[in-house]
Image (cartoon, rainbow, N blue to C red; front, side, top):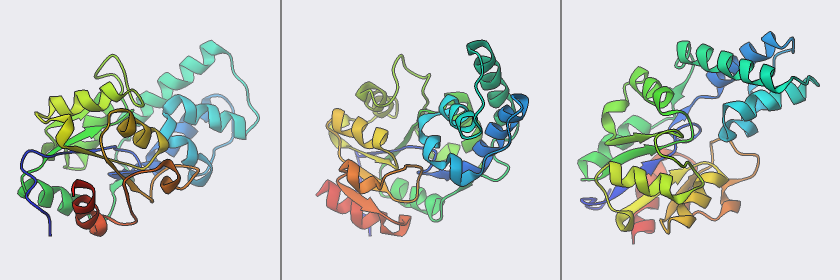
Length: 226
């Protein structure tokens, strides 16, 4: 059971928190690697780099295959990645189990919902529209929505304000060190999810609560708010 969440804003990271985007991000990375003449990488190889953004994924893939490129070629590969990804943003990406139901429960309890991600805003909206989740959020803020992005706390507090909420009545939900560090910098409590994209266990980053499945979220949220 959820408490009365009127006036509370719940902010979610996107990749590795709300949606398992690893398959489509790996496909986009492999599209860029093919242009560079590099062999493809697997989802598992790429997974620890996903939370660091598209350029980091390409760099990691090139590094795995021992391929180096010029700065101009790097920009060309990044552009190719983004174009391919925009056309294939939700081929195999799916919300994690229980996400849609939980969002409805939170909204029903009076919470404002928002997304704060370092994915570009247009791609974030496109993904959430394709997965029929976009309408559940009062704000969707990407890495280019504000002049700053995570781990700068202004990205998170700006997202909360965009959703019509208050930073002193908010919770951040994420899978990575960047998510938790952003919440700490903003003096906002956080819930870490263990099923995302990080090379270290999310517990090591010091969230206020940790869940292994979204069925555990109501109890975790109650503890954090309490």
